Image (cartoon, rainbow, N blue to C red; front, side):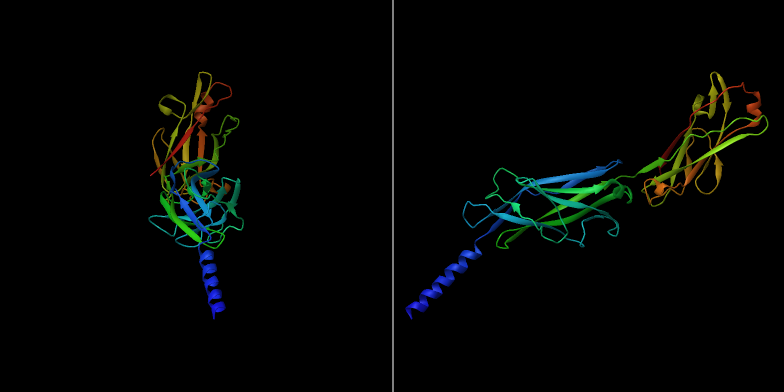
Length: 304
């Protein structure tokens, strides 16, 4: 009877030691805010440093741990539009172990396969970093507004003890409009009879779903007049713009309402959705002094 009692007591003692074996602490994890985004190229990167401690019970020995980030809405690392959650910006989240310089791209809802280096406690130092990366093309492709999502960071110790902390990731997308694909226009050589005419196709991108904008054309003449020059000699030009509905005349420095801006790609997928046509009238060419004439037009687009 005495031997049976000793076995039961040993079993209770062993069970208590296992349950208290690993403790995970998370300290200093704050929200990640990209702020207001301005157009640019490449990727956008923001990060947050904090501390993860994994210790064995009350001992001073640190231990390894694994990490996971889970979206609290859906199953992907997306930042959702505050006004329309069906619109989102994809994100990449990476964990960095600052003690071992280990960098681990994270998969939503999955613990990292590799183990990180823990502190025995979180006092005055950070050993962890979350890095969030967004592609500028993805930010440009969504309507302007606020985008955010709430995520849960979890650390798992050696005895499957898990502790979690939540953090927001936010970005503000501003209205964006961009003109690209403009090339020089060569009107050619005057044959003594016919008007000279040339055109160039270009792209107007906007992240506004309406596709509306204004286009203002300015020449190099006095008051922005359209002309080409050879020394002191000048030849006036006629300028027309087509937004996909047909060419219409343009007045210097006068904003012209336009439509049909693309929101599918910042360069319209390599295609065009607008055109400019430039003409020099025969009557003006006949009276002009011989020479090579050149000039410059400035096209400026603005969101509506």
